[in-house]
Length: 619
Image (cartoon, rainbow, N blue to C red; front, top):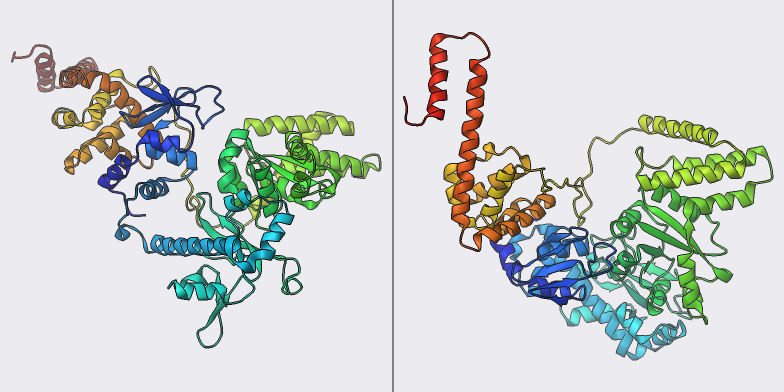
């Protein structure tokens, strides 16, 4: 996305009152002049999030989440600034200039519009078309309610191979666009097209913002196509859709997952839908594939823990092994839940007491490494020494996949597993740790011998760039007070910036972060722009920690500027800087005078400088 103008950001921000926006995500309560809410960014037990309508910002006094309306949406939606800008612009009905979009963004927007059109057509067919009667009966047999069907946007693609093609022709939706998103297929001759999906219940596959990017189609039982093709048929890969990147239901489950502390991964679409219908909203499913590293990275963005759900018959399959490798490599906590009686989630949930049994299974999920250890023990223990060695090497081999410097949580899990493993096998822990070190060293050698790519990958599109955890450089004593006061005043009253430009240079500031802020304010002033907080935050888009700190500085400075004392305070601050500069120069001159013999002329020059500083007006 091209650079965002300050004017555009201000226009979108002004059209989105922060209280109204936050209230669409969480309940907002009155609290005197400000408002409050239970903070969605940590496990808040009482309203700790304060929202200020006058200043259009928010802050949590427990976890220190803070910012303006863009920051809230970015943090809540787990998206980057350009996406937050587009989301809030759409909310306010502000049409972003197409010229500001890259060709890629423009093409993607057209595809999303076409996908939305198709979703509406399929949904309308399911709800109203006589040809969809069998599809409606099938969904009823699966015990899916009308509300659930509407919530997930289900539809129906008729048996005719030209139904969607005709609808597109009637409504002048370009065939080539529908072909690009995988809904039509071009015939080899004559420039004709036919529908990709036929006689199938259609499940829209949505991205995390709820936009349809593809479809999964389930052929109806008894359909003439049932014997000639797969039961489930997904969209082909397109610029919008890649089944290795997407998780069904994540748009509806991510906030519930954040609240619960975990997301549960089941196998199928109807498993997800029935879980939601029964009040368990933190459930997702892959697109008929095994979990991939990209899936794990997505899950890790929203929750610290993932629970894989297996029925009792499948709990021992290789899916656990594959998942363990993925999750340990991503420093993510994985647990395994097994369902009773060989039932899949959808079948269990419709039985009497099924919802409660499903919830209990999730609550009783066991750490995946411990789960694997129990599996191996049941299979290998009591047989041979070689069998027990395989247990040790299998568990330690999985542990060795963890990052070179594991997090504290991973270290704790490793120590617990080693302790239990040593106890089970009858070995000393030191022996187990020594074997672990051998396996780890072997893995490092293998990695060193593997050819390395000659490029570095950036963050995946649409993800929020990760920065190192910012130090709290505004903590007491971490920043020179005089420098802090300068930024507080300038951020609270941009009209003071021209005064500062004439009297102090950014390089005078010792603190690098505040020096960066002051330099950016000066650059805005030099460019003829208003050097206010909004403009500064655009220039600090690469440093969200600095943008948040700037808001804190502004809030403090307002106590001085709103009483009409800003100019007087700034004058005192700038005089103090001048005094500090003079004191620094005096010390330097004295040090040079006492450092040893020097040229008489040089000595006189130094004395003159010293006297000129200590006795103004004398020469």
